[in-house]
Amino acid sequence: QVQLVESGGGLVQPGGSLRLSCAASGSIFSINVMGWYRQAPGTQRELVASITSGDSTDYLDSVKGRFTISRDNAKNTVYLQMNSLKPEDTAVYYCKARVVTQELYESVFWGQGTQVTVSS
Image (cartoon, rainbow, N blue to C red; front, side, top):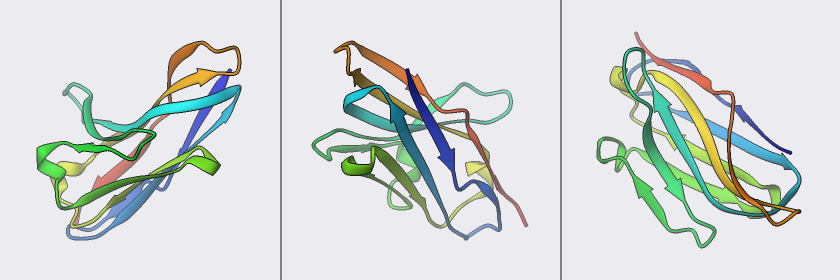
């Protein structure tokens, strides 16, 4: 089994910054894609940013230039640096990883979510 543990959410004023972390542990052989999703009340979960094992990245248009995704493969950890935060960034942020387990099965795992609130 694989566990994803997120941290770094909280309350921040508009224009502020937060850094989210997501550490994967367990029966991991390799991790292909890691990503961050978010879901605000009454909306569908959306992809915010993703990063491949080769460090190729993709971003939601509304966060380009403000958010940066990165990963530390040695630590099986993905980060999301969020700058110039806006009230519309308020949501629960979820980490997702496409993992090849030590049994050589590929599966998708999700974290439990961390709340990000942008408000004055």
